[in-house]
Image 1: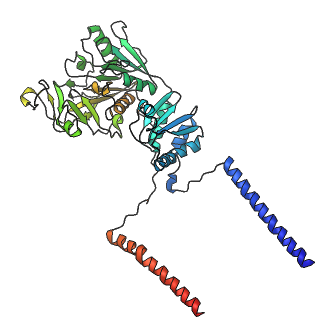
Image 2 (image 1 turned 135 degrees about the vertical axis):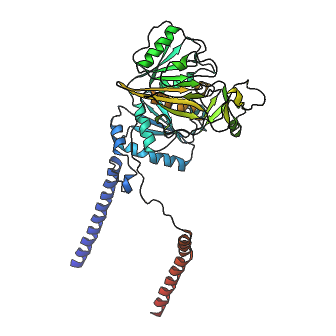
Length: 447
């Protein structure tokens, strides 16, 4: 009887062990569905968000929606999900939705998407597109969308200017819509009927006036600039209506003629009056900017600033361009005797100076067409226009997020070492395994 009781007890112990093991596995599965704990053991925690980004996410006042316009490609979508997942671990109310551009072309066009996998980040009625998938770009975009302080852009009207709400080809309506989506407030100002520029104006816009200003209107603009106001002036070839004289101390001069660029033909452009700019200086308004921008019918600029002013040539054409002073027809050739200067030519300047009440910033671009409804979608024109406005309104102080790259993630070998390792893994290691197996079999047979 004792052996039978012993066997029965042993059997019951085994049954109880398996029941407890199954229960533990079930409880572990249930806990994993309700609670999540992630450990990042990678070098420098490169798979986790930096403390700066975590602090930024803690200030979100509501859900944040991320739309990824990626085709139905599992590999691409997995890479995008891996970039967004650290944000979702910090804030579960951050949602990611994939949209196939092929199945929803209308939505893709309305969102202004140009790149496969491009993100559209939406927060509290504001949105911004992002084509670069890294922590610094995403966190900076979220910070801009969280900007709750109102920024007023005042556009001067009454002189045939391009308007921020106009729908004509030469107007800036699409650009104005993009500014509103970024949280900027727009106001049109007729200096003839309103004898002052509002004090809360963060930026004054002069967008290609076609008729002369009255002396009193020029005085209002001059007073605004002397008081430290910021200015974005988009000019075009032709009469300048005394405007270059207003920003005193900048030494600004608009060269005669229209810029023509022989390099346009290499990009498939059949109009030589479209200047191409693909390289940008080290300046906050163009920091990290890598897109090609196009400038139709532009003017070249020169500047000799006085003490106190800093001038940075923002936009410069390539060699093979010049300011053509004659009519744009037939075969064009530079004529130095007519004052036509060989490129590179400067199409845009950024001016700044320090004042007791802060820093004053001006940007003068020798072309208004690049932000017009007709040309805004070309290359990086829209992105550059938004960058200029951010810099002018002092929205350029973004998060300084340190890169989280690991050390020694690449193995670099010379050709001899690489060949030895390759032969070893392809031939020597398999031969060693086969020899070992045959030796073990021979020894077992002998025994």
